Length: 153
Ligand code: DQA
Image 1 (tube, rainbow, N blue to C red):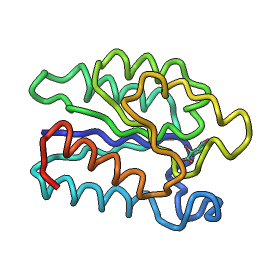
Image 2: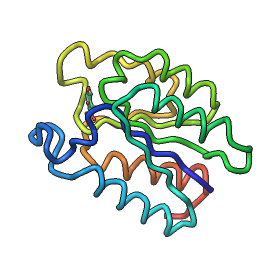
Image 3: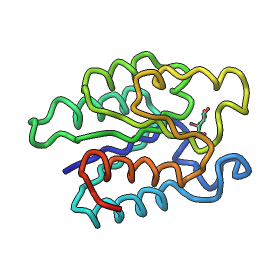
């Protein structure tokens, strides 16, 4: 029972970065809260963040496909940040794993600049959560708890 949480470029700055858009919660807070909630249900949450596209791809390949099947994650929660709008490579890495994933954005990308309206991931995601701030991550986790692990709420 394992899940992968992936955060992309500039999300290490959460709390400091345009807080009026992205909120005051830090990435460490988000990761700690989600890790604890997952652990309550016997699930290990593996957290990764990078400003480097290739590192994110390496981690997705590793935890989603390259490790022994028994060690692989069951599903993925990903906020690719700006890579959402640019990265065919990230899409291909996610597809390569054949693991279901939920795309999360803190801000509502559809109310922002037009270049944020395009996502290279949304059409192959199980779902997309956008505009609900850090709660979006929690909701994505809850979805996997119910759907992948049949947790009763
Ligand atoms: C973001 C939205 C992206 O457009 C932006 O580049 C980010 C963060 C969000 O969480 O709202 O860095 O993914």
